[in-house]
Length: 354
Image 1 (spheres, rainbow, N blue to C red):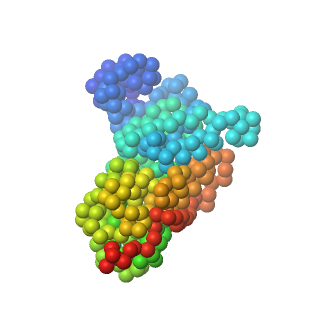
Image 2: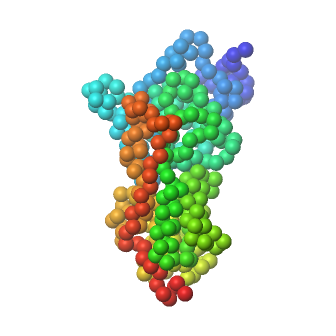
């Protein structure tokens, strides 16, 4: 027996009219009530039936681009590149195939990510591009795979960009070699003679965080330092975390000679904290970032980092989302991460290396 609007209303504890208002978006509904209705819709797997279901089988000109934080340059570059493939003339057909890209800012919330996917399904999105790492939680992974399967079944093309393939779904994937990039950064510091390394990692339970840490540890293991207790502090991918994290690392090990930051923005916070402590970069402490965002080369000193081809990857994800490019073999394209050695790293000073 198919699920009805009344079933959803009963599960959410609201009237059928309220459910209709939430689904149609044509009348203001309190946030808590809206969340309750959408949760009931998902739990019951409610799909509009009757004549409306035929309409739902078609897709609109909408493309949803999900980002963790549009203010973060990493996501801004990716989103801009994806959107560049949607505008007039991007398909070489005078704009006849253009789409409207909508940026959905999740704030890193797994729940908000799922809600946006539900809303995009109801808007009959032509495609959805999910950017950045994902939360490593079995419950969320299963729920995410379910949402993406529903989108695919409804005719929506799904592309993952900057995150690994999703278990339970065969979405086209454009990903980065985060392990290899972190490994190359650590090898670079080790080759300079650094042995007291501090690592400022991203949020726990994130794929990007784990993969970069794995690359870091692999390099240490190859250098015979696997048993060394590398100092690691987790935090957000922002400047404040870099500043506070650097101070915490120095508190734990005052003679630290190098700090690997989770990304370039975190590295800026690290540099500020070191300067405030009267430490020189790189004479006293070397600093590395990750991503090679546009400001990295203009930092003082220029930041040693790993370059990810964000614009190329985002544009490719956009073309794949609109079926304008042949999918990669196996459905997964992996972009190499290149070491960019600059002035923020140097051999440790003899006084701190002792």
